[in-house]
Structures are given as structure tokens and as C-alpha cells.
Image 1 (cartoon, rainbow, N blue to C red):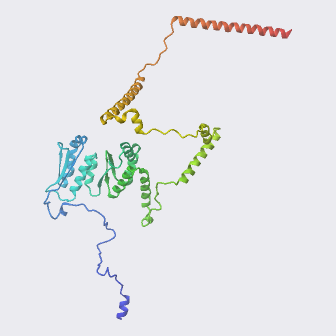
Image 2 (image 1 turned 120 degrees about the horizontal axis):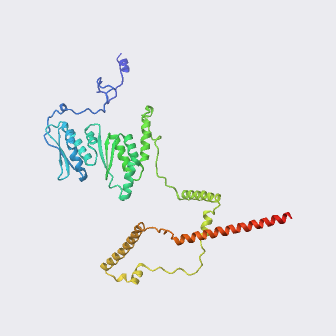
Image 3 (image 1 turned 90 degrees about the horizontal axis):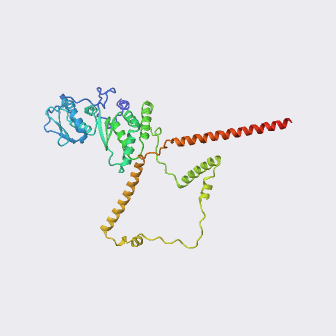
Length: 388
């Protein structure tokens, strides 16, 4: 009997031998839900030490911050956080008080004053105090050295009429503000990660449209429950820089030339090769090699620059630069002055000129009339001869 009983008993895994049933832990419970921290959750009472954070703000934000500081104070007051605005040193600071009950809210307040300093409106910055929203300030100033290239790539994040920025905000559920050398982002953690990736890639010359397209495909795939456990790599586009071999480049170049030649033949024009041959002038053959070009030192010796001292060389260079600048300035001044030169106007004809023109016109008409009469006479004579 004992042998039979041992056969029917379920085999329990060694690791799960001491685990017990949890009837309170059901599937309908959201394990990832973040519950709000209430005053009664703080069992230890008021904090023993004061925590504080301060941040500087630019001069142009001073007027706005002075206007909205009462709203900032009202937003932080329910959490027991004190805030100060120092206009002399240009800084904002937040600190905990005896009324503060949430230990993490001071970090949220720090993020809030950072966002205010970076140009975010107070109505938007206050949302950072909720647990579901986080923020990220992406520094883009040191990614690109060239100023013009930096401005163009930063503008690419915004897009025409802000369309690219709007698309990023809708797909990531984040608020994005491009300001100076930073990009301020507010939203869920997953969205912040995506926005950071898009922004940094854009500054590295990868257009945001590729990442936006990828996010759109991911959003559609997330709606299908069958694909929840599968890899989405086969659906996502793979944008890679294609490095062609030399032979492939030559083949493509030849194809383009062939297409061009066909188009030129259809238009009745000579081909590219024929044009080149026409342009090439035959050089006279000479068995002697060309004369050796003088070195830089030889030229300096010839002009006497080699014997000049350091300060004399600098003075000479400065003089040359000044002469060149003067030439350019004179050209620009002349070009600007062209606009103010009055156009040549035709003077009104005098009475004598009018009379002369009238006489000439009358003489021309008389001559035309005389010619007409002689023609009529000749015609009449010819008809009479034919009749006779």
C-alpha cells in the first residue's frame, strides 16, 4: 500500500518544496502599479535633516519667473516643499521642511526648477510632481562642433512648422521643448528613452523620420495580441548606410552616362564623350620635361620676405589683409550705391523737334501717295494694251 501511495504522490521540485499557496495574489492585481505616497505612509515622522537643491537660470527668464513664482509656491506647498527665487544671484532653490512627508518629492521639485530654467512653462513644469511623469534634459551643444551644422540639425528635430516635433510627441506620449543647447523632455520613462535616442541620432546626422517610421510600425504591431511573444525584427525597417564597391560605383556611373547619351541623341545633341573630344585641344609634343617649379623658400628669397623679422612679417601680412579688406569693402559699397543711381530718363521733345517729326511724316505720306498714283497709271496702261 505504501508503495502504491508513493507512486501516486505528485513529485515536488526541490526548489519549490517550501513554497506556499497565495490565495490573495490573483491575476487581476497590477503588480507594476505605483500607489500614491500619502502622509499616513510616512511612519517615521518628520525628516531629521534638511535636503535642498538649487539651479541657476538665464537672465531672459527672470521676468517670467517673477510673474509665475506665486503659482510655483502654490504647487509645492501641498507637498511641504519651500522654494526661494534669488534674483541677485539668478538662482532658484527648493528645500524640505517639517511638513514634508514624501522623501522623493524633493527630487521632483528639483526637476521642476530645472525645467523652469530651461524655458518650460509653469503649467507644464508642475506636471512633473506626479509619479507617472519623469523628465530628461538632453544636452546637444557638444555633439556637433560646426555652428551652422548644429543649427540645421537642431531645426531638423523641430521640422517644417513643428510637424516633426509634433509627430515625436504623439508617438512617445512626451512633451518636448527644444531650447538653445538642450532639449527638455517630460513623459513616461519608455517615451523618454525613445526621445533621447531620436534627438542624439538626429544630431549625429540620422534623420528623425527613420525613427518615427519605426515607432509607427511598433505601435501597430502592439495592437496584435498574437505578436506579443514574438520578435518584431522582421517587421522593422533596417536603415543602413550602403557602402558600394569600386566596381559597383563604376557600373552605376556608366549607367548614368549611357542614359544621358541616349537622351542627348534623342534631342539631336552630341554625346558626352564626343563633347569631351571636341573640347580637348591637341598639345604640341616636346621631348623636354617642364621647368621645375620654384620652392616656397626660393620665392621668399626672391621677394626678400625670407630676410624679414617676425614682427615685420606680421606687419606685412596685416597690410595685405587690410588691402584685401579695403578692396572688398569698396566693391560692396559700389554694389550698394548702384541701387541709388537714378535711371536715365528721356527728355521731352522740344517744339522744333516735334515740328521736324511732323514734316518728315508728311513727306513720307506724300511719297507713298505719289508711288501709289504711278502704280495705278502703269496698271491702267497695261490693261489698255491687253484690250487692244
